[in-house]
Amino acid sequence: MDAVTSVDLCELESRFVTLYTGAIADILDRLGFLEQTLPPDITALRPGMKLAGPAYPIEGRPRPNQDYDTSVRRVLDMLGQVPTGHVAVYQTNDRGSAHLGELSVTSLKARGCAGAVIDGGCRDIDLILEEDYPVFARYTTPQDCTYRWELVAHGDVTVTIGAVRIAPGDYVVADANGIIVIPQGVLLEVLEQAEAKVATESEIREAVRAGTLPLDAYERFGTF
Image 1 (tube, rainbow, N blue to C red):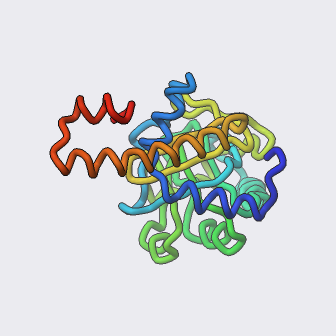
Image 2: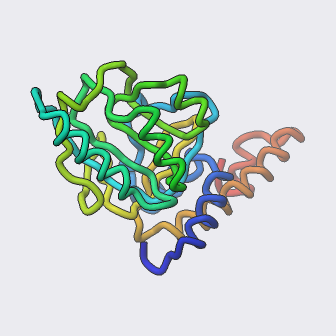
């Protein structure tokens, strides 16, 4: 990311996880970025999971009868290249196999990666939950991808999930509301405006609790 060091990544993560994706989505709408939310059926493995970090895009495709050793080596090499603080973002183009399991999650967690978002499948769910590591996936299945799926590219690749284009370094935030992607070029602007919005919404909340009517609150604060 431009002029962002590993120390900055920690600060960004801590600031973004105190926000919520609804506020970030509102700011992106205001700035003209209207297609930044991933499909709603990509969900957390457990309620309460949150993640925030720059995207490390990964793309693959179904390919039956893959050679096991060749396939697994490619995947393991890829997992070892996800940078600290980043989110592994998978476009699998697949609906039949699990593309992430417990040992892969253990590796990502051990190296300080921020989490995984998978337009595809996951398995070993109970063991992943024991790791308390944030994973958002489209489905779960016990069927491994190694014999059935081919890793095509990772890192220096742009993927599309739903209507959202995700380039390396775009910022991913996920919580109970869903998953949103912030284009790298407006990251700090979105963060600052979202923080201001959340602070204003706290004032609105108190005003409404005190009896202010919704329209009056909107006219007073300029948002609702």
